[in-house]
Image (cartoon, rainbow, N blue to C red; front, side, top):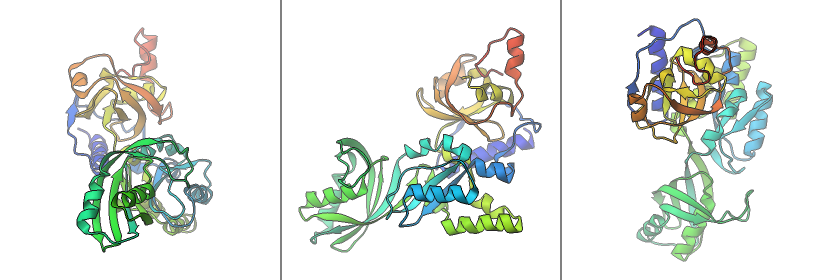
Length: 355
């Protein structure tokens, strides 16, 4: 295995670690990538790195999520930017901000579970045992109607709360860690816990600690740090801090199962073709039909996102057929050679991303 291929696969392994994934790989073929085309994510020129970057921002209290994104757009002179899930003005914490090309994938962060730490104030004292018993009632599937002060229609919704942990309790103040579906209102959970206890309650403070694969423990960036990094680059010509604070777009999809493809299959996918089995070099174990997967090159570059048409086991046994139906193309055509056009001219099949 060539050095560039090894480094690319190591980069993909780091993406799995970033997202907390522990998946094994099924290897279909041993193949190297060519250094003649494509650019490993860690070697992109700084202007490309910015346009294909995601900032794990630590949102401050005060501005809206939209205002924060607008500031970053102006700072970098970008035409597009987007965030990975709205935070109310007073709420702080993890707000992934996608720049330019990365906005194509930020929606796959928006629709992932979120983790929060909140301070809940009870209106009268209760015992810790009573509180813990009430908290357990909110783990699992719950029904929730958005609060009066919300930006969405107040229709009844079903949400899933995966975990509620009582971190601290002083009789009237409880520090909670809550991991739940996107769109779950923490202040509504606090209010409803107060109703169950019969004493009333409301949320005093809220911080988001995790959004998709981004967690504050893995590093978040403050607006002033981002401003300093940009100043350092523009005045001193040093891009080290920008590369530290802005992550490659691949980190935004690090939580998805992954399929690695041959160099000769890349351009067909970039043109919107679906991925056929012969184009696959390796893929994660445990992929099921219908799963959203990320398609990567041997250098670790994100090519596209798609829906699995076969499970890992089916791909491992198959020699032909569509393995992934492409939903969102990220890589521009022409970055890799157009091997698929040669096959078309020679009477081969078009549009399957074959090798």
